[in-house]
Length: 269
Image (cartoon, rainbow, N blue to C red; front, side, top):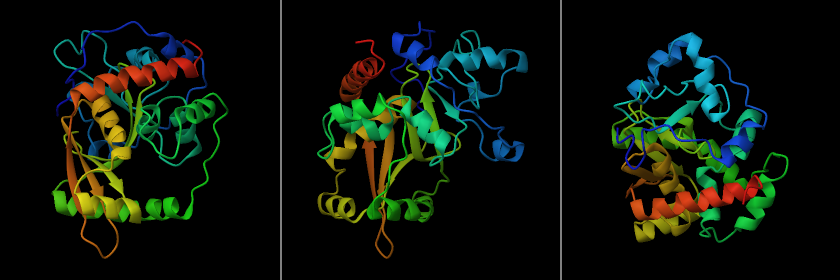
């Protein structure tokens, strides 16, 4: 795994945004079944469970009880741990709250001014308010229904097994991502799209639409990976697999822009 690319392994002081986050209610985490943990190992050796007596203190590092608490500096002296897996199921109330209390991958194009349908100011107002369920339109609901089948089609094409997970940065506690698919070793990442419009655009240009670019680079910034697959799929059509590489220059700008945005959310600007 390309974990740690562009990230420092040294412990950094928590910034104001992190302190603001810590004051918010933590998402209640449920035990992770032993069978599931065995079937899907942590994506980095240093994310193995630490001794029980140290787990709570380490979990507080990013404001909540996490499935794989962060190792302390001594344990990660020779290795970088860019993210932890948060034990929350996508689509649930807990997930909505966790997602609301940070900057997610789908927020990135909005914050970067690359989303033609939404402004950063509207997202700012939403983040400052109480989290609410977002109603899905018919296209969004269809995409949600198709995603599991699309993921299986991707696995068949790519020759790798992936599963959806919620990830949170260990460097910036506000940086989160609900990834559509990540392999057990953390090497493979995929973002899945099942919409008619995005399929047409991607099939025509063989490129990722610009309004999704920030979303992909956000995931690469969080994970430290070098690439991610953009997978467009619809029933009865050939899947479109577009590999997207890490853009270091863009990521530097993205992280600073997202940091400034989150400071505005928390009133620290």
